[in-house]
Structure formats: C-alpha cells, structure tokens
Length: 98
Image (cartoon, rainbow, N blue to C red):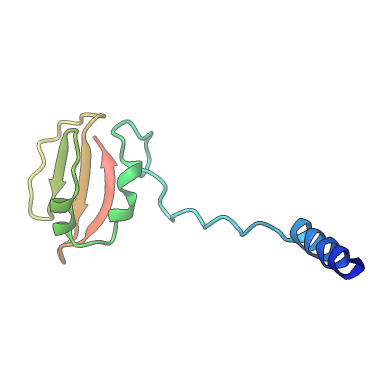
C-alpha cells in the first residue's frame, strides 16, 4: 500500500511541476499593414504567401478586391473593403483594408 501511495504522490507532484506548453509565436503580420482592421482581415492572414488561387477556396462574405501588379486602381478607399495584394509571381503578398 505504501508503494501505491508513493507512486501517487510522485505523479501528483510531477503533474504540478510541469509547465504548460509555450504559446505559438504570433504571425509576423497580425493584421493589415498600417491601419486598424476595419475590414475583418485578421482571419485571412494565413493566406499570405499562398498562391492567389487559394482565394477561390475561401468564402468571404464582404467586399473584396484582388489587386494584381498590372491592375490600375481607382483610388477609392473603402475602410470596410478587404484587399488582397498579389505579386507578379501570383502569390498573396499582403492584405489591407481600403
């Protein structure tokens, strides 16, 4: 009986002394660059670096504009609009509001 109690005491002490796993590092870019997240961009940060075709598999229920390098932008900024900025290579470079 003493051995069972000793094992239980050791396991209890070990459980109390272990530290929780470290929180994962925050992504390098936690939100749209240089602005408040007025367009709800934060949930889509994981798409940065992905091929632009990844946008075809994501349901986004808000105003969206996909900006390709050769596009001419209209200069109209809408804080609620989600902008995906695409590189010449076809990857999502950044996400901004406006």
